Image 1 (cartoon, rainbow, N blue to C red):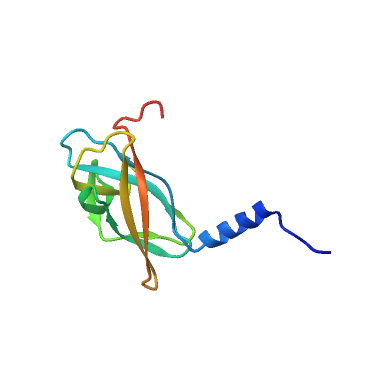
Image 2: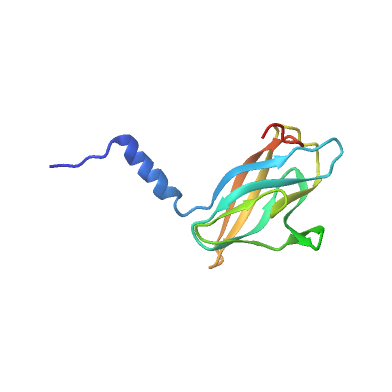
Length: 147
């Protein structure tokens, strides 16, 4: 007796196995800006199949892009650039307002709601291999209405 996978299932299995070794990005977005605003944040969920770290971010819209963390010092919130962000194997690391995020600085133009911001994320594995992930992050409004 010969066993045959339906074509759709075979394609699905190939897609899952092909993507198994890659870093996945989910729900990327940037905060829209007002005219003449020179900085904004980018947010997303990152999942790496192996221990890795986010070591660099680039964007054609920004003169600089930095990985940032926000921490509390007593009752004061502090934000600072960090050199890298650990991505533990299999864990989803969320970049979000009030936590780790990407800062886009020296913006070349206003980012309006529904625009997209091109981002290049450089991830390095424990053995030094680097992967560049290019994404287009949609801009969400300054104030989340009804979300």
